[in-house]
Length: 124
Image (cartoon, rainbow, N blue to C red):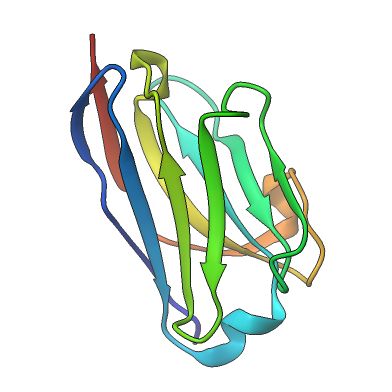
């Protein structure tokens, strides 16, 4: 069974940076697109970024474009999210997720495996 384990969250001041990582438990990671979603208290889970299985295609939410960068290392079965110029509104629980196929999606329903999440808190 594929498992996803996020790490790298924490408390950072506005304007700071964090790098999230997501380790997959098996080599099925390489055949699937991957994504990051986030959920703030009292809000619905929202799309952040996604990357195709090859890494050639990416897509970002408008709210993070130009500040966040998604990447993957298929040899290490690891997904990354580099977050720069963080804002208080970026505060949320960040989830790593695997898509149902190799193409990128922005809809949570098209992802079938989720990690437990890593908390990111940005202070003003």
